[in-house]
Image (cartoon, rainbow, N blue to C red; front, side, top):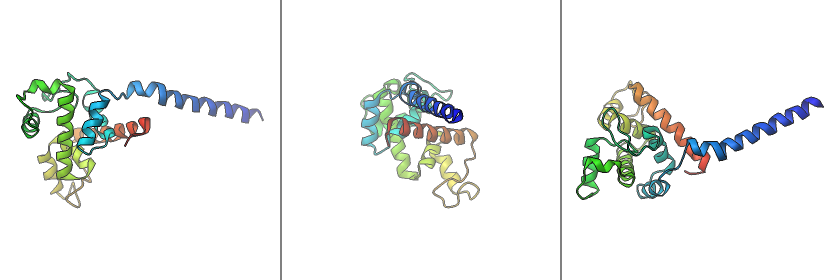
Length: 183
């Protein structure tokens, strides 16, 4: 009988810790900064908000002034060529690279680019690989039987950094889905 009371206390303590983590600690670790912009752009580009949060978290940890070693900028780490392409395609007046530090512009360009990649590749894992490694690399991989069986999905990602990136975004997306009950 003592064991079952002790086991019940441990189970209750564990359940309490899970609730505290989910409702108190985890929202600080996995915030929804720029929620209105993320959800507006995700809806406009038919993307799951959890995917956008996963990309932002993985790319910049919500640091709007982040700059990568490859000079990608802002929340979604937009590169110069992608920014110029998107700026023109979206009709952003007087577009400049400095605009990538403005959350509204960065998130819109990032969502536009994710949607553009999705239109090209369809599969989310493949889209994320292209977001990280470039669509040219992914197109080559899809034509190589070492990396793809069907020319549409990747069975193997040859760049270690890209493989880790896809895994991180996927896990983070699942955390956002679980934590906030969002798609």
